Length: 345
Image 1 (cartoon, rainbow, N blue to C red):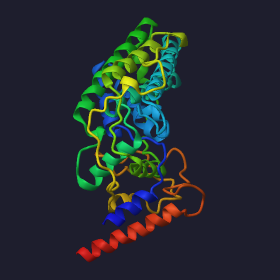
Image 2: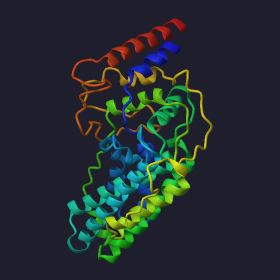
Image 3: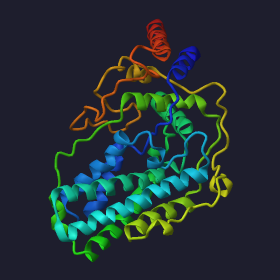
C-alpha cells in the first residue's frame, strides 16, 4: 500500500493553486449574514454565488485565499491579501456610490462581484491563517482517505470567525450605501441565474499533489494580528481611503513574529496518504471541460451549472496535449490500487 500512496502523490504535480473554505460553507455564511443585515434575498444569493465562485475563477491566486505561497514569507503573503481587500474595498465603494444616483442591474451585479471577492478572502483567512498548500493538502488527503477532520476548512471556529467578519463587512457596506443615497430595494435587481462552478480538475489535483512537499512544519500566521488588519483594510478601502493610506501588517519581508507555529512538527518522511477516491477523481479527465465536486468537499451538492467557466485542457497532467509521465504514473497507481483491492477481497 505504501507503493500505491507514493506513486499517486509523486504523480500529482505540485502547483501553487489554492484550496479554500468549503464552497458550500462560503455561500451559506454569506447569504445568512447578508439576510440578517436586511438586504434583499436576490442580492444576497448573488453575493453568495460570487463568493462561491472565487474558487473556480481565482484558484491560483493565493492572496484570494489568505495563504502563503511556496517560497514566500508570511509577511509578504499577508500584505498581498491585505492589499487585495483594500483595493476591492475601493472598487466596491465606487460601485456603491454609482447605485445612489444611477442604479442598474449591471451596476448591482458589479457591487455583488466586488463584495463577494473581498468576502472570500476575509472568510478564508478564518480557516487558513496563511497555511501553505502543501500543509493544507496533507490534511485534506488525510480527511478524504482516513476519515480524519484535520482540514482547517472543517474547523467550527473558522465558521464562527467567518460569520463575524462577514457581518462587519456588510455593516460597513450598508453605511456607505446609505451615505450615498442608495436604497436596499434597488439591490434586488440583479442577475438571478446564480450559476455556481467547481474549480478545474487540474487545479484540484495539483493542490492535492503538493502534499508531498510538506516538511511537517506548521506555518500559519498569527490571526490575532492578521484577522483584524484584514477586515480593517477592506473597510478602509470601502470608506474612501487612497493608496497612500494602505497599511501593511508588517514592515519587512521576514516571517518575524507573524508566524504562530501553534502545532508541533509532524513526521512526514513516510509521505502523505492517498486512496482510490483520489485516483478516481484525477484519472481520465485530461480533456474534460466538465467539473465535479472535489473529493474534499463535504457538501457536494451539484451546482446549477457544472461546466467549468474555463475549458480545462490539462486535466491532471503537468502540461501539453498528450498524456504526460504524471498521467502514466497515475494510471499505474490506479491499477495497483484496484489489484490490491481485488486481492484483499
